[in-house]
Length: 221
Image (cartoon, rainbow, N blue to C red; front, side, top):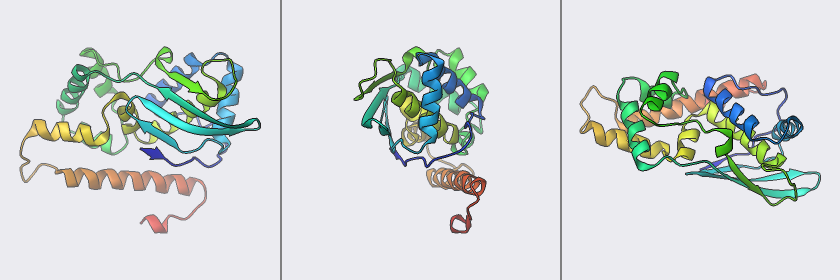
């Protein structure tokens, strides 16, 4: 999945959700020092990070700075099959969890219960791998930290970005849940209902972002 380039933004962009803060802590753990973090956050806000390609266990983006254009790629450990199935069971164990994920929320209780059965959804700093075509000697370099910072913004808006990285893209998670539930009754949400709810949640998030920037949102209504 390709996430469009984030335009320049003002402010520190501090994470508001608990899971985005946890991701930010992992990025901080991975950084060589505070100076690299400051430079990476500035780079992330500058609009010079290209669209981020997110796939299972990997991410790639082009990053520009005064020294040139670089390609940054990184890895996040993928949950094994047992862990993926355990997470699906945890989501299915309580009503409302699928709807919460589709609405852009990652319930803390869901992640805690997953941890109880051995599924660590949020990575630690040492689990974030990165490479870059630049000549920087720190690992991860400022370019990689900038991309990781923007990934935090993406997964805050949509927890499925995190799940995709960990090996459970949205379509796969919904398919596994559907397979577990069997034929849907008239009162149960269908895949179409879930898609509609997901699209509506994305439009709402986009509208709020545009309003915060002073733009109109009539075209989204």
